[in-house]
Length: 316
Image 1 (cartoon, rainbow, N blue to C red):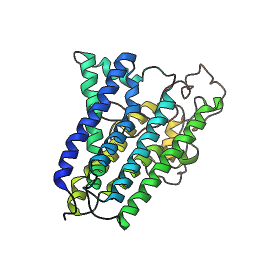
Image 2 (cartoon, helix red, strand yellow; image 1 turned 90 degrees about the vertical axis):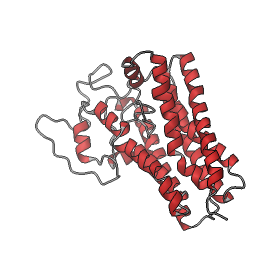
Image 3 (cartoon, helix red, strand yellow; image 1 turned 180 degrees about the vertical axis):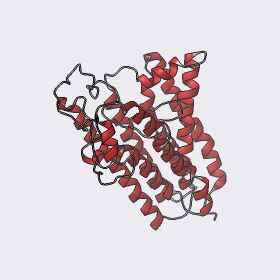
């Protein structure tokens, strides 16, 4: 028996492309009815969960049952947690300024541009990044050491992401922190603990698909693409551009790793620069530096490669 059922996998790839497209098209319809494109951020994790669920159903009899269940569960847990977190964080907010800015630049019809660039673009990324989920489900290779290493990496990533999100949510919930930079807990070790966690999640899922050199090579694009989106693509780059003029942020970036968790560096204040969180005098609800409680992304919010093709989802 072949280690991977390539024929059945090919059918699965076609069906999951349709599933991802269906989730994003349904989201597009809801967004048009509500006049709010930011809800597409919630659909990001749901679309991954849909691909994993469809793959688990279609792969029955075409792969190792333990591996099938493990990779499906890992993807669904990650995806639904992320969607629930974004839904809670978005409650009561209006449109995301990123989508407003994007559609203001639309050449021609704004609705068609949003469909093509945001929704279909995200569906394509969901399908591409989920390749390890699909490949792993069609392998007859029983679970081994590499698979358990993958789950360990996945769990570390999920924990890092969830703890980072929780720490930030608590920080933002305190009115005393309005206008201040989140530089505590995991955020003292990396400016993007949620991005780092997201990257680890997908490297862990990738290891579950490494049952032979052929599938390992075929799906390597997934964790590489996710990591690039988070580090040099629209994720980290856009967020830090948005945060660059916030008082104290330059000092925070000087002492805190941009991605990999590392001990905080000693930052020397240059002439004219401000400490990360200066005394509160002169700032308040209407102060120029009081943005953490008002802007929808918050002090450093949550994201993932949720930041894709055309600016979404989730720029932290």
